[in-house]
Image 1 (cartoon, rainbow, N blue to C red):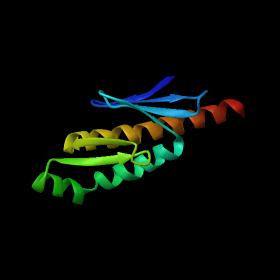
Image 2: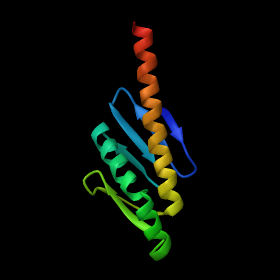
Image 3: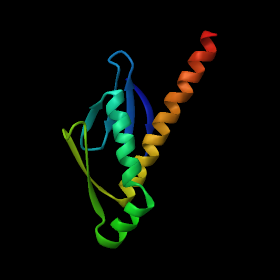
Length: 107
């Protein structure tokens, strides 16, 4: 298992042999397929939108994030949402970079 990125609250890993990803949330480790990771990225984009962040700051500082077909639930505050957004963006950037490097080496 290879660590892709670590942020303040989370760490992402990739297991190439098992063809899956892991998200370490400090108190639990979640196994994700690539499709589930894409779905998580879309949900995090929605939660980190300026409108949602403003709503959280004005009304409630926590939100629920369900993913993997509601198998996992995280209770996140504003800072954790922004940190998760950073982690997801960096994870996809690193995967894209590794793919580019692998393509250059193969050519």
